[in-house]
Image: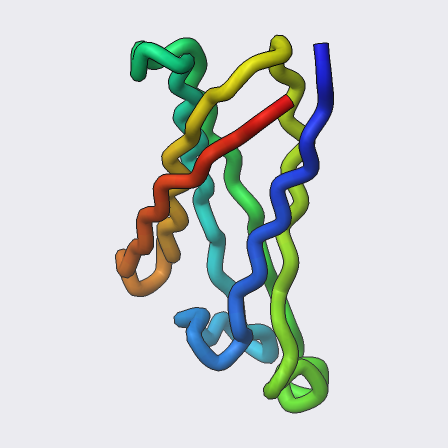
Length: 102
């Protein structure tokens, strides 16, 4: 079994936030689907990443990226994955298919 680290970087200016009192809040949801070499889905998981910033911190992170790291354990071989990122505040989403080799 091998391990891969999937790094997702999202520019803060592309993240929709909702104002709640003195904070700006949202949640990002990542769905990871793993496919084997025959394109059969072998695993699917969804994780949520809540994000809250005060207005001062929000100014500090502009021009930077929010990073999500996901450790993936796979059997040796050539697999692929579909990663779907959804911003739960604005309901926008992005999807990307990637190749994985262990």
